[in-house]
Length: 459
Image 1 (tube, rainbow, N blue to C red):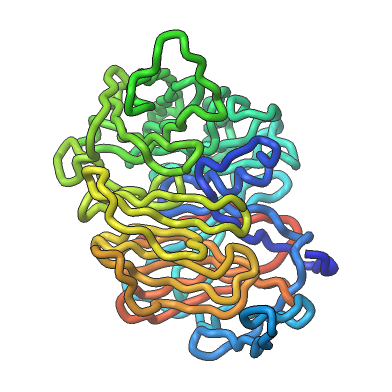
Image 2 (image 1 turned 135 degrees about the vertical axis):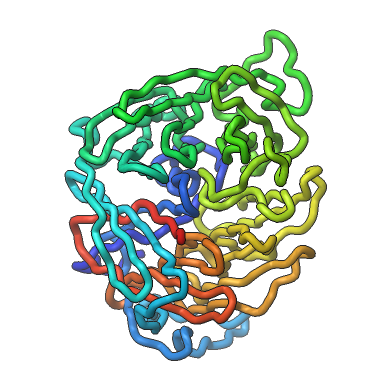
């Protein structure tokens, strides 16, 4: 990490680890804990001009050539030193794909959020720019959550104190006009928009959900929902007990019911970073119910779609959940995805050493992007895991990279963002057919005036 800084700037992605311990590394760890709702979004930590240099060289068959490692008497073959490391993006053209899948991403400039899209075979296009509110400073960490319909978006930002309670949200329209502002939120829980873009849900402390409705004229109204204590822990909390924000479970809005009457939520353990409970709130905020499963397939059951933690947490075919276990090292430690049945019984866990992200497909398969390490991996692999946890053949493999992010799965396509930095900084979006393994890719132009902070894939 001590190489000279390159002239070009990219934002290398660092996927979240939900529920990581400690507040002293809050500014760095938040990139591991937040992802925007709507589509299978990811969040990028700004390595930018401070990143080591790397190369984007064309490679055949979607795989980069890896320098031959040298064996040593002290252990396995060693990774070549930094000065010899050559990184390469996937060599693929910007080709058309059936169904015209679209990747949408958000860049942050000094004064605005630039929303751009890529339809495979048609190049990059700028949809619009939303001016940032004057109160958002250049050093503020922000995370946009795009509404599925309309130009509005929710802007989550970190507070200035050492705890989660200082986080806030701002609801902006397409012109950047502030429609609503809320404080006392937990940005790591993300936010969730209804399918019609008329309701957005955010989570806050102590044990409060904020339901904000928006009418056709852009007028907003807020309802606070105080979640009962039995939602949080399997056993009752004794009267007089003190709940510490650092150890209290965090609640995450996961999605709406098929009939739109309920908002489903999950309870995340701050110690383990895994789902330990589930509940639902009526869309008008008047009722809260603790539930034993998400009721996938029922009219009042959850319709799984990519949620606020950067993956589709609940399988739309079987109702199973995929949650995270974390290692002791937030940057390079092991991260294991654990799959549980609808009754919370253990099903299987994805093998290590590091899962960058995982996303359910509509076919009941779990698609996972894995590597030997989260930063500077020697290889990144996309594969499908079946009902019994068995991995199928690789759908996509790369050579050495600086970092990779899983944008998500939509229909029969998966999208990734890849970054290299030795010896020249470069980045690309990649779209791969899950059936034919045909790959399309497009470079993300470099620049020092913009950071990519969110992305999603959809039809």
